[in-house]
Amino acid sequence: MSALRPILRQLVQSKYLDLFGALLIFGVCYHRSFHQTIFFQGEIQYGIPFKELWTYAQQGAFPLGIFSTVGAIFSLLSTRLVGKQNNWGNFIGILTTINSGAIDFLFGNASAIITYPLTFLIVTFAFTKWKKGELIRKRDTNYYIIIATGLVIGFALVYLGAYLFGGRTGNTFLIVVSLTFGLSLGANFCNALKYEETWLSWIIYNIVQLTKNTMQMNIANVVKYIFYLVNAFITLFDWKLNGNKT
Image (cartoon, rainbow, N blue to C red; front, side):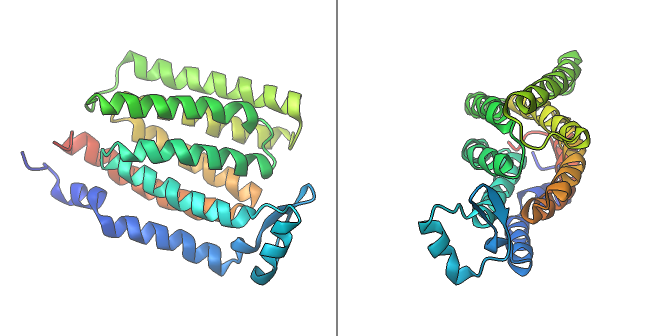
């Protein structure tokens, strides 16, 4: 059966939009010299000349900007594939969760040590569920329970992580991190069950993430989440109006 709103489906399935998003992130990061950012001797250092990166790496520096940029591009492709209802998106999401956790920790979120492993498990669960042929479903009581539970767990683990491991402990920062993590928990679990309102959760999540990454000055992710916000709007209506891909 053809899609009820073919333009929406074409946008979601478009390979050109994938390419545009990837080039957008790479272009902005390169223009802002984000690839010249490293983590060295316990702190983030900016503006390291590209030709000197290898020298710093030999001294134990971590090429934070490069890994963040590459991770952002693959995370974007993962999200786009999930929107296309392609389970490879969940598989790539498993891998990018590991990279994102390390990057988030180095940017000051010490609670990433205990929060990202949980995200890893949920995304792995999503990959397993979709592999069995999960179909798009309407929201029900469980949807709201999942969202609420995700927020409670998010705040609990982030504040526990800050208490145990330190890092940035400003109250505003912790609230923003708690919201993003809590929303992502609910959204990722709803994605595993293929709720169409998953993308509504991601819209709210992306707005909060824009705030968080602006605070962290993580340029790669700022650009990524602007693109994500637009993509989430498109995909929400595609899933609602056009339903399952097949």
